[in-house]
Image 1 (cartoon, rainbow, N blue to C red):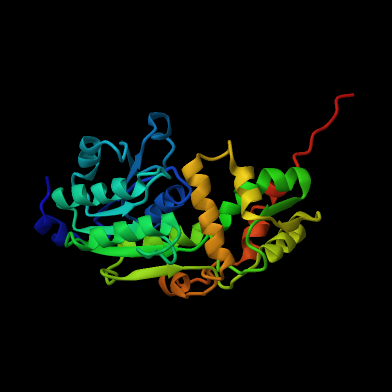
Image 2: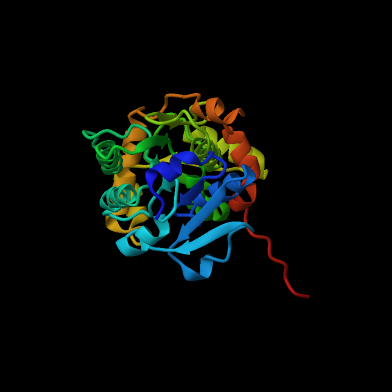
Length: 305
């Protein structure tokens, strides 16, 4: 196993980056972004059948974050790791254990995917969990960079079926604005901090270029799809009821807490980190609506003669 000294002798381009969650919403974008920068990539996935889906030159590794021995093997020879985890009720414990294993394996650098406004005293469980992981990682002596993205635009795809079929969507947020961010920008920012020096000890809040309301989202989707789409402010209880049977109870309750956080206006601040890191402006709501319009449009079917 390579020791820390061996890691330091390598240039950033020679380094091997381990991407956890490599087939997920961010990881699947991050892997090709890293390859485009000429970086050696080890892509970690839980599913054997998805380990062949990576671009040429990517080293696939099958490992579950809940399996310490598999994770330790995946970390062998890695210079920097990108830590994201699937949504589970013990995600904070899983991430903290990964960081422990990375330290033991001699991995010197870690890029941690956290969340906008992560604080230990937040009423939102997800924000408390992320804050706990950040605090734990700080005790390990690793070179760490934290990325704290706001609400993902791509999270709107969870409403896509209803929007396509019925032309509306609802959430308990009222007229509050959120500086939502595109996952493509999260991946681009992560690729930079994983492959360039100077980001140790930094925490970057990733947002879009403006704060938008859900009514504005509906208007942008209407323009992009060419069909009327409306937004309805619904009660938290009605929103929770709509999630029953769709999400596990703990996840649905957490999402209701998230939306209460948004409704209080606590996620509206705009930060420039995406542009500062990547050199390109953060993607706007209009960009997302245009690029994903097909997901919000009814599927056309033709009748046989």
